[in-house]
Image (cartoon, rainbow, N blue to C red; front, side, top):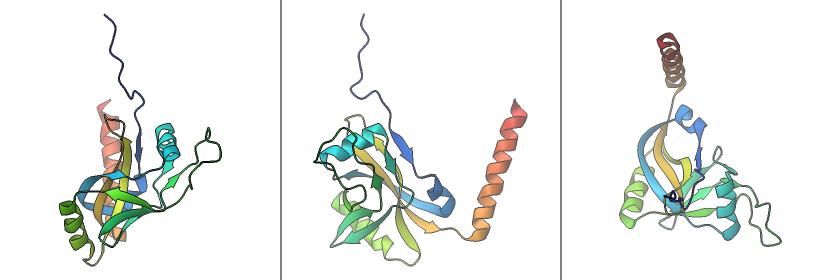
Amino acid sequence: MAQEKKKFEKIINIRNKKASYEFEFLDTYKAGLVLKGTEIKSIREGKVSLTEAYCFFRKGELFIKQMHIAPYSMASSYNHEAVRERKLLLSKKELEKLEGKFEEKGLSIIPVRIFINDKGLAKLEIALARGKKLHDKRQSIKDKDTKRELSRMKF
């Protein structure tokens, strides 16, 4: 019996590691992205950076800014811009809910990870987040260290 080949064998899961250190996540959403042809090819190669990216509203639509997608190496003259505003796709109900919470003081919308789903579409996980204070960051470092020590003691 021949094994069935999956349509998309390479797993892409690019995380924004700085986000969990800098922010406290209140709510998460999965959003689609409006991309150009060469952008999805670069994402499948894993050439994406989310470290400086953030989301904002314009005329009731959600956009992501400063997300760096490297130009596709095999493209000719029809390559994309590395850093540009990209529209995020969410349902109208989710957009209204997010926009209402976003207007509260101290809340922001940040990208957490980008991945390719089972259908081969690029999805972005975004989080409604509140910035951590210095003492909260110190506490998260302590928790991380104790978790690491406990895992070493078990083995």
